[in-house]
Image (cartoon, rainbow, N blue to C red; front, side, top):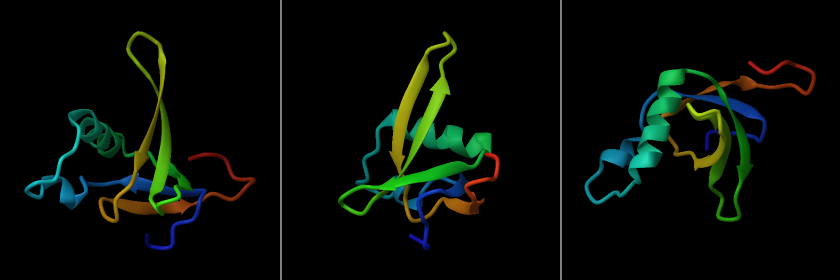
Length: 93
């Protein structure tokens, strides 16, 4: 996973290529989430690795009605770039 470590910041730049492969199934809501992440251009923090070895990010967003929604997303090998590593004393980008 390109030597990502928990706490690293990544920015999504394109949809993961496997999304458009024949036979690959992805929920429409997950595709929309990827598209929102790409459009926002904001860096996201790499949060954890699950027991299967998949890297995850955790997201929090506010709906138009004002409700907070928490989401987690496993990230693919491609479709993102490193946005730097956060040191414990540095502010969030």
